[in-house]
Image (cartoon, rainbow, N blue to C red; front, side):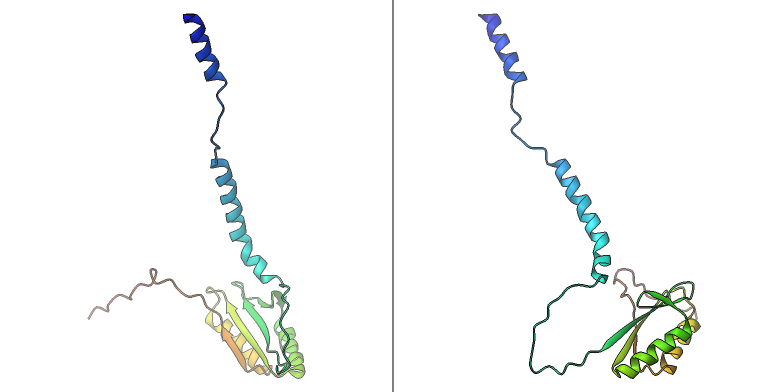
Length: 153
C-alpha cells in the first residue's frame, strides 16, 4: 500500500485544475487597443459628426462660417484641408462674403514658416474683404517654460 499512495500523489499532480486566469495577455491587448484609439481619436474628431441639434423658435438663424487657413512648412496654403493658390483663395473668400457677411478665418501656420509668409497670407485675406480672423497656437506646458537668461552688464 505504500506504493499505491505514491501513485496517487503523482496522479493528483498531473490532474490538478488551473483555477486562476492569466490576464496578462488580455491587459496587453487592451493597452494596444487603447493606444490605437488615442492615435486615431484626433482624426475621428475632424470627420463630420452627426449631431442632432435641438430646435428653438427664438433662434436668429445666423451661422458664422469659419474657414480654416493653414500654411505648411513649405509655405503652401491649405483652405479647410485642401491645397489652394492665392488667387483661388481670394475668389473663394469673395464668393463666400457675398453670400454671408459673417465670415471668419482661423489661420494656423507651421512654426518653421517665415513670419513674412504668414503676414502675406493675412494680407491676402484682408484684401479679399475678410475682417475677422484669429491665429491658432498651442499652449506651452508650464514645465517647459524657462525664464530667459539675465543679460550680462
